[in-house]
Image 1 (tube, rainbow, N blue to C red):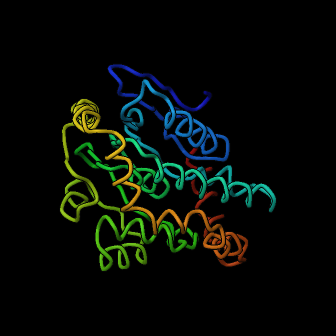
Image 2 (image 1 turned 90 degrees about the horizontal axis):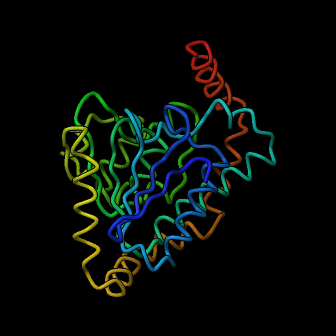
Length: 252
């Protein structure tokens, strides 16, 4: 794997995101995550998974500098791959715990939302879906994911304003399950994964997928992402995205 570090110990597999400083998502990394979880689903040595970032980033979300430059075919491939990755993670039948070690905006928050439990580092880190302020139209299945965790009213308003929450705010609205010192996040997530791994796996998996059936059906239906892909090329939306990209390039 080029963008992931994977290690299994005592039936708990750690999947560490490992692309640059911020773990920004692009097509190659997204497809690698999908492949890894499809393999772990059938791996008899894996009873549960901990998904973690590195340094001060879980994932900074989409690599807008790279994907803004994709042509139409590459953009369609990217969004289809993104939908498939989220669907694969949501359909993962084994326990999945997110160790949110740092910043987790946009696509990083979506990754975290696929987990059964989320533990976050305290500090000036941010988490949330800020797609609207950068010109990305949020598809309905993503809203549904958000609403299942923080409630419909919060999800509706947070999405429209692109709210990014501090850890304590994320805990208060139910977006994360615990806020811990940064060095405690991974061990606590691992302990939770170990606890869940002791449950009868078929019962756990069937119950988890029963609760997610309607959501999974939406991710399997790629038509939900067609409007997002079309809007990706909207002239006004591209101006907003390009301004963000130009700002990021100037800082770099």
